[in-house]
Length: 525
Image (cartoon, rainbow, N blue to C red; front, side, top):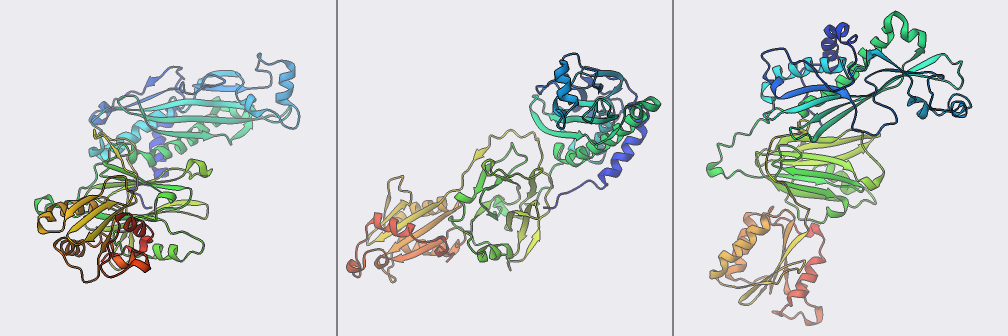
């Protein structure tokens, strides 16, 4: 899936932002409480809407206090452990590194965690630069970017007290919180690879430590750079709908593939994950036996149809044209699998256009493919942007589950009976004359507006004609994709020994027979 990116390489941008801040930020004193970073550079109004804070990570349960300043753990630094406990930690073939990493140690107040000083100052320059580049992304509601320090510690390594190497462990988070304090996004930064003797770490006023802090900051800020457009999204470019008279904008259509143990979620008319019109979760066990809308066959569809021992599973939906769509894909929790990162994208569906969405796993990589489908079955990758993590809409979302709807319409002389195939409601009966045409059209309008609905129509014979039968035929011809249908004669429903010409068909028998037909039989007429 292609995502829009800022017109700059993120690693290069991090270096440029970091350079003027290294000398002052790396030597700033640690502060054990949450400290607002001064917001002093003038014209950017974003400083009134986005507050950058730093402090200890107080949200999670910890074995030691968060490291706002450097902690050094040596074999002799713990008074809480007995000699036997020390022996377990620092001798033997399998030392307890987890407990060792969380020993109290000694605090070096002058060496602040990069999450306390360096990262927030670099982030201030980054965020200011982003809003200068995209002033329309400045939020109307306040939010907070909080840098939370967790681990910033040099830990004695090896199985004996004589081992001279100390490893630098760092962990911190960047949390984006909405105006109400709720969490919108969290970025984790973890580094534990750098080792040297304690003397090497402390030489020249901790020069090696400060250099490591700069590298860690660049890696963490690089993650922030990639997420900033989703944290503070620009408004989507709206489709020009002025050409559609009376606001009658044609819908778009989308085919969503499903596979075992995976879920692809569709949000319609969606400005973000929490502001949308409909939500549909397409799973392997609720897709593949639904109504089709006639989206042209593509190479992806043909490939899946040709796979041996594979049950083709997909669904086609009609969605509002000119409105943003969001797609997300993930493994189901019970599958035991997961993708690193979030597979998600947002784009505006063009009126009258077709799309298909595929969650692919290949070469140990997760990919979310969004393609525009052309009338000849060829496809073009659809450009999508990272899905916004927060937005300021107020609509209450509606959850829509994929449905397997079928209406059975049974014609007998002078009468039309309409039954939902689930038989959860009483059948509707109409007189088969012109006066009932408005009621029939209302039924058909409701069926065409519900993705997945198909019609199974039973008539006394191939030459049967009546006011409602002819009106139904004409409507299906006008909307073959919205009303996929199957036409049967009474002789195909009743048992062969009683299927005389003009034989009456029981409605329950018609429903049973219609439900036995596979989805491929309900082709657009």
